[in-house]
Length: 130
Image (cartoon, rainbow, N blue to C red; front, side, top):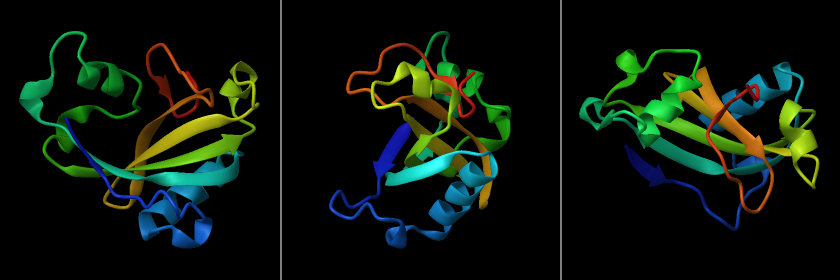
């Protein structure tokens, strides 16, 4: 896995969203989440030979609604937001959730979520909180 950070820490407003960010935000709103804040954009890149038992890659893809085969060695935008009205809100003192939306070819293919806590522990949750 390669992770390339592509966000400006000082500019987190919605007016700085890329087209991928707009797509991700619209998707979250369609799912009924209240998008509170944009957190930034990264790019994920998975190499097929990186998949090992109990690896980051294996755990990450285990909660995605798609299989990883079509996405090896492709750049996948990973857009981060803070949302409310998410199933994991109850596990956060702030009553909100950190979500990361995974896209390919400007389509949402999955993502992850976790309670918005300073120290999040445990494995991955799907975008829906499963």
